[in-house]
Image (cartoon, rainbow, N blue to C red; front, side, top):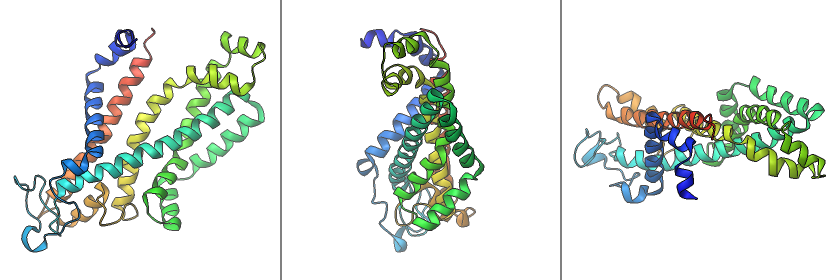
Length: 281
């Protein structure tokens, strides 16, 4: 079974996508960094060394230098990966769950169900995403739970529309018509026949959505509305480091490079998966 999977045209197409392989390596690497952060980080990310290591430049002891409180930036970047990756994955998981359920219902049933769901989606599309996030965080606080719930709630309309279009394409296929003719309930038809043939595009949307969620969390933290000190957050480090950009460039540059690398990795991976799924088996 594994041999057949590796020999499939789609896997071979993915393997030929160089940027996709680069993206896969980046995503896997940062996932492992997030999981193994306590063992990878050479220092405690919250330990302050104001008297002995304040704003130290990159060196063998402090690979990415230290901040204004003497904390090791490399250790904080490593532990920040746990927060950013978790928020990105959970937020996009919520958006996908809502989007798949509502999009499948809209596409399969049509009529007033479709109109109602799509009009609700239009309302969410009309709300500026960053403004929505700021309002939610201001009301409920800036904890990780609030952030990934808010990100999931503002992101589902895009996923729902993609899912709806896929279901509209699949629901007229012969095997769906045959299943309905045999008397299967609508829920069973959707679960057994429609969803398995409509989820391929959602994999691509999901990988790109994780990158967007990570970037949104970094934006909130940069504005001071995301993860709060002393927890390490890439966006917070960029925010605090901008005032030292001319005297301690490493403070904000390294977290910014990490965010760029992770977002590029998910985008490269999503593009490669999209191209591979377009190949006919």
